[in-house]
Image (cartoon, rainbow, N blue to C red; front, side, top):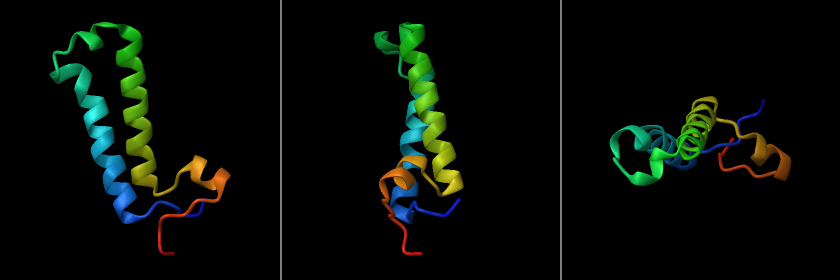
Length: 70
């Protein structure tokens, strides 16, 4: 796959991914007492981390968006 995620986008995805993965375990919010909300947060966080590491986003490919300079 071609690279389509730029540096600023990668940093944003990395930070958001870490927050979404950690939130159910460290926040203590009542929202995360629900298994569904916890699962959604974990899945979204992992997707953000994977797209940041791979430097490619399938949705960006579909819509023709490119935030990198390559």
